[in-house]
Amino acid sequence: MRVVAIGEPMIELASAGADLLRAGVAGDSLNTGWYLRKLCPEDWSIHYLTRLGRGRPSEQIARFITDAGLLLARVAAHQTRSVGMYMISLTDGERSFDYWRGQSAARRLMDCLDDVRVALVGADLVYLTGITLAIIGPKGRQSLFSLLREGRFRVAFDPNHRPRLWTSAKEARVAYIQMAATCEIVLPSFEDESALFADADPMATARRYAEAGSTEVLVKNGPGTGALSLNGRQTLLPAPNFTIPVDTTGAGDSYNAAYLVARMNGTSPIEANAFAQLVAANTVSRPGALVAPPLQLTGMFG
Image 1: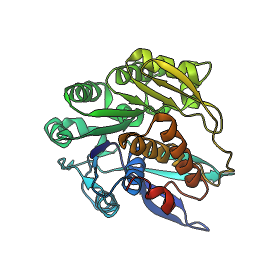
Image 2: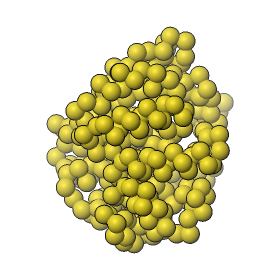
Image 3: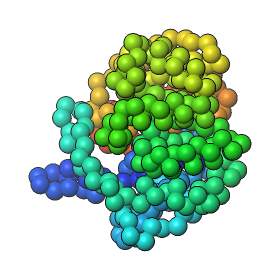
Image 4: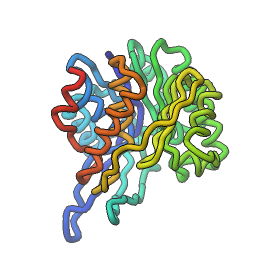
């Protein structure tokens, strides 16, 4: 299998004690790529498609990507832009964030249309999130939609809605529905969807994306009951076993990776959901977005 994740890697500033901050690397689609590499068979290749700039922060991100076993797609570096950055604040296991991402070279990814097209050639699965759609802007989105429609690969999408990245809620709603018409698998979170679309319950979210054109919609709902729409048929999903979280960062990213690995290996959506819940529960049991899954989970698919 050849998987391509598209997105914006960022420098992450986290507390290192007292008044010190530690600079790491993270980002929603990059986190999912990291978990994909941990969970998938060794003969899969996981590619990360982004655009970096010049300077040490971009070099740090490039090293992180390759050290994690991912393949960094060849896209021309931006000559004047750098990378985005955010700082974490943690209260009772829940994180809040302050962002500085206006200078991010990833925002200009679709300026390199030919490089992006080449990076997608031969892919079996392409994965992206609503953050990617937001930062590349209206023109970039339309170019990306065209490439995805042209491709002979499966497309998976997590809306992962971040209101501050959009000019309006309407713009985000339109983009997500357009994306649903372009992709096969949608992995939304009910909390985000109820706020943006006023969905009454997870089943309403599943139906809406199915009606937009996605054949497989799995609605995550934290500790609550989720929903699945598969080829137009909706099913409620049982709530996961309750886990008191230490840190919820990366839960959805790890869930998405586990679900996609399981589905690409031929398991049913119900079985894939159960596996993904185990991986996500492990993620929230320790601090940080990147928590190595236990061996019994990493070895399930070779």
